Image (cartoon, rainbow, N blue to C red; front, side, top):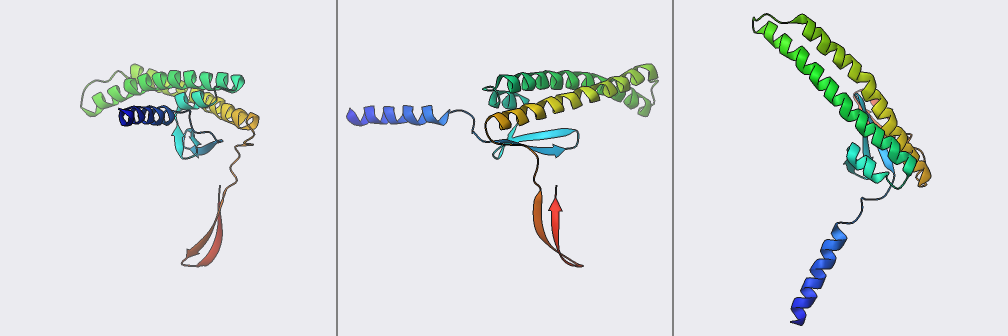
Length: 161
């Protein structure tokens, strides 16, 4: 009976500690086409996870919350615009009679979604920077990487940023 009680308590302890908070540490960014990817340690953070990580800082949380809302809004507008444009281009390729006004409206929606997406990325970046600065992790500015490179024309020092 004692072994059973000890086993149950040990299992509960292991389960309780395995669902702890997000890993702590600075939030780092990687510039990508169309925005940034956010990481905490080696874990990539989506907007929901970024919002959860910065939640202890009220101002950073509000920025992350706005960034998530703008990302959703931009994705919906861009997706609808892409569908409207793509359907008519597909109709034209298939030999049908496309409605170019609808295709133009779709292209317009895609164009409108771009600044909204850019605003979302700026807000997310600001939230991550604010979180890092208030938790003592410092700036997010990428320090770059130095490599020793061996190539066909010799050896060199490479700096990536």
